Image 1 (cartoon, rainbow, N blue to C red):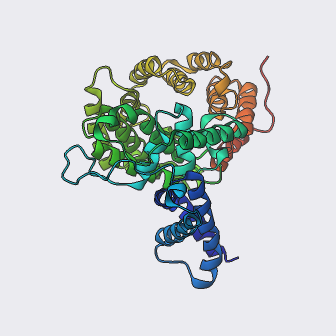
Image 2 (cartoon, rainbow, N blue to C red):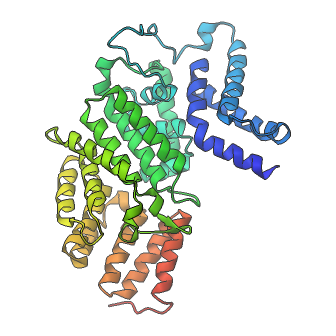
Image 3 (cartoon, rainbow, N blue to C red):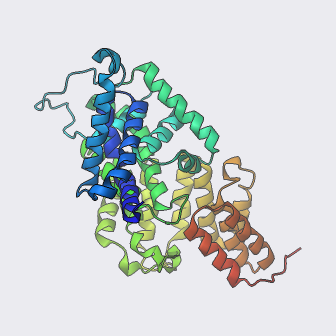
Length: 417
């Protein structure tokens, strides 16, 4: 097998999966059948591109092959009604002149809103969209949710069956329904971004395809709902956090926020993001995405690490925890407490989360403890915490960073009583 072809197919999977699947669902009207056709298209690409060359537009090639396969399979069924009983657009296409009709048509949005239908449980909505829209493996989705792969596989299967039984239409809902449907969609785009920002598995720290896809979708949602404060907050959060992308790695090695070259941050993205934060914060009370974006804005506007206003960040986390009591948010708040009040206070805040089941296999809890223990000169305990973080981490770049920290502490350390 030609290595360049394998790389091209892998890249096409990362970048084009959502487009190809979403377009194929429109033909099959059935998610499982569409997935089968798309997977077949990628398998054919491995064989065909080896002899015929890599096409100029891999996504278009894959879409054509998948849709042709879908049409062939549909034709095998005796009647069209039997072939397309499920995800059909039950309402006629809106009149382009209708002021209530969304003016953005994107198959990816159709797929998101289908997966995020109210008939499906909230967690299942997000998991199904990450699996289908982003092409994440079940293991990657499970890691994002901090659950086992078997649990996630069952959750995704149940969600697919629900779509079939409820005969959920494959369409972007009318504008009057969008406000009640948008929360789940925003959560999906946010989790898509966080999964790309720091990949839970693999050799790359950042999955650029997922980051860029989430930013693209956030902009599409902003165009659909320009007055929605939560949409503005999410777009701001992605812009402000991703503005640091170019400085997070140096020669393939992880660079912490404290050590990044802030002159290399994307100032245009920061300017746009800060303006969106101000807009999102005008709503009272502010939503969770606005608060997270506000925290990112504090980092973005601090000229140096030492000038970061950690007390303001703790205050914002206090508001966020009250609004969205997530264990991961509580962990981030604990780290901010340690940076505002000292490592002893931070360690105490982290230890208060030690019995939180969701964080039991979360490597960042152990690595945060290790850093505060190191600052407190408790080398033995810090080493144990770094070893725990290393055991739990599945990203090669983060593992290399943790191994380096352990190496810096020396092979022989004394465990404090």
